[in-house]
Image 1 (spheres, rainbow over the protein chains, first blue to last red):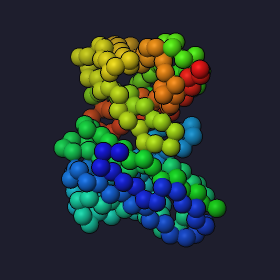
Image 2 (cartoon, chains in turn brown, purple):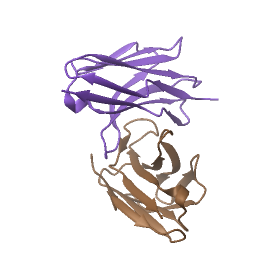
Image 3 (spheres, rainbow over the protein chains, first blue to last red):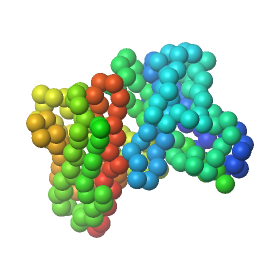
Length: 113
Length: 110
């Protein structure tokens, strides 16, 4: 998917354990985003980054943290996973403007049991 | 409240037939509207992006229309193919954030 790789693609974890999802891009785009997608809901923004070490919260950021130490990598961490965080997580990137040239990754399916 | 609503929720059509998906929004101010196609197990892929001044935009067999006055958009798929089976998502932005619809699930059967 246009230079975006998400890992892992699937993960099952237990309640209370920490989980880190990785988004890697080879496009050298400035903006990176984490979304979650759940049945009955549109994609919802968790966090986004507008540069190395520059991040901001989205509409559903509680229980999630992010880090971006390099342009190409954006990490999403669930400090203590809960069943409500079972979801499909998508990373997206955009080049020079937050709302143009948006490209999504293939997603990570996370199940918290 | 800014919202994007899509209809129908799901649709089944025969291969070769046409179909139209609807998107109504209350987002204001309006910056642009996008249609995405999302195949099962994949991320959304952009089909079209429409600004305020654009009424119609085509991408192959996909044609999107926009009526900014009534805040409605439609996605028309012509001569459907089995590969059109997917979820179609309408997204509107006010220039500050995206507002996502919940999608229309289209199934094309032989």
